Image 1 (cartoon, rainbow, N blue to C red):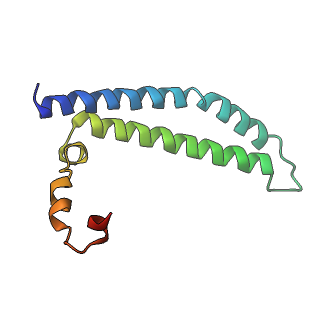
Image 2 (image 1 turned 45 degrees about the vertical axis):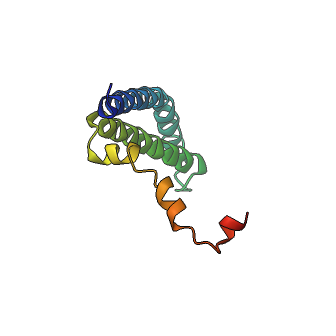
Length: 110
């Protein structure tokens, strides 16, 4: 198996893991929406801003953003484009750092 094929398998596996994670996050959505709508309908007419309404609104918005970000990341890893390839197949540069050490550097004294 070549490096490119192995990269495709790893990338697709990571993509499936992100999709499952996004689906798990989606299961929290009904609870958040139920709590949000409960507190939106429960606030006072005299006092416009309510702590719990703002709290559940923030939680719900960030949950939706997290779900969207997970699906976008899963799509990027599924396609396994050039960015993903450079992420996983970047040159280590270990040989280059050993050549750059000068004779009087602190690394050589150790």
